[in-house]
Amino acid sequence: MTGSAKVAIVTGAGTGVGKAICAGLLGAGYSVAMAGRRQEVLEAANQEIGGEGASTLLVPTDITDPSSVSALFAATTQAFGRLDLLVNNAGMGSPAIPLEDIPLEQWRTVVDTNLTGAFLCTQEAFRIMKAQDPRGGRIINNGSVSAYAPRPLSAPYTATKHAVLGLTKSTSLDGRAYDIACGQIDIGNAATDMTARMTEGVLQPNGTLAPEPRIDPKHVADAVLYMASLPLDANVLTMTVMATKMPFVGRG
Image (cartoon, rainbow, N blue to C red; front, side, top):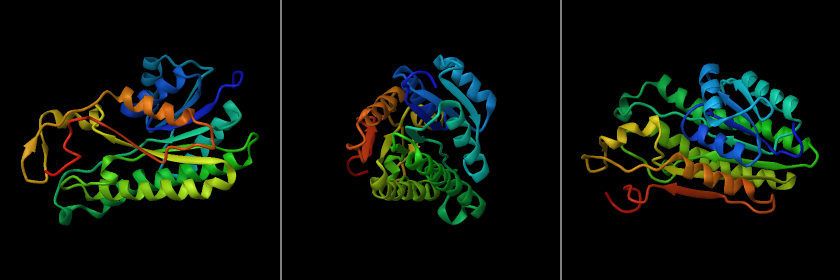
């Protein structure tokens, strides 16, 4: 760890929003452990955002595997000495198929990634943040506007994002005694590979297909940086960052 740099872990760090968050944190002087499934993707992302050996640690991680999660947090504290920020960003969607046709294995995969993975990482962060000196830290969960309103044919994703909101609130409450703050960023259509199809048209509740606007992931990263910049006695519990003209607010 160099000087007094704060230390962050970001899951899903190799692409999209996660990569943008890592870039923002590095620019703000953080040391960042970048976690993702594939080493080569992490390496490409690290090179793209200008990470260096002294400021980034690349840790291939399966967040659905408790032993892999434990190894991530152990490697981070070994490299940097502490943990100030966890960004539970990793997540996945599922094919847009009728609810009654969703295979159980698909359901379990989404739940394991979006919910259980965030829970396992939160547990490890709590153990470190409670014990370190100075005590405490911050956890930011990547929710979604789907934590409040579903899209058609999205039961696994929507259910997990509603559950992440519950995890955020429980984490915020249970962390109070240990100076651990927890908040959630709810994103509406960041311009990533995951949302590319929205430019061509996405199913609306009235059965029509309509293109939806997207926003630069840097705006999400800037919001995360604001949340992370607060002292531990202040917290943003939830923040929605969305394309102004997406069909989220209103009827449709």
